[in-house]
Image 1: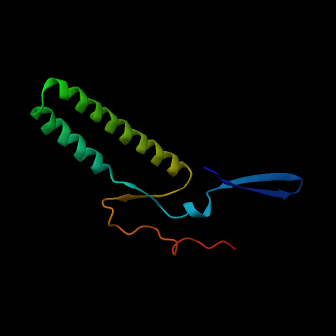
Image 2: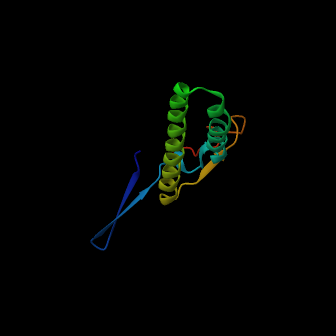
Image 3: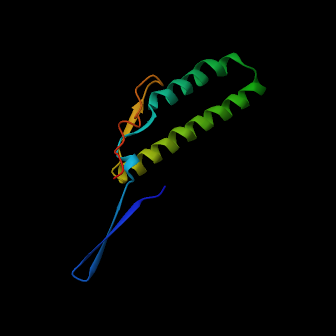
Length: 107
């Protein structure tokens, strides 16, 4: 990701300020955590009980990947929060998205 760097020269000193690009002013849409939890509970409570041992290894791999994805998303959220960028948890694809009309215009 590229950040915009401002250099301000005052009294012989240079102040550097990094800011997010204009397109990150709006909250970043990401899946709500419940989506991971729902999939994990379904796989652990129902799917694992309905399959044979060979298939269990494949489902266990999916469960591990989902846990890693959820943990990675939390790291991304923390990184965005540290940069002062809000997130918008999405429950559905039908939620309104940030459109080009909402984005700031370049001057």
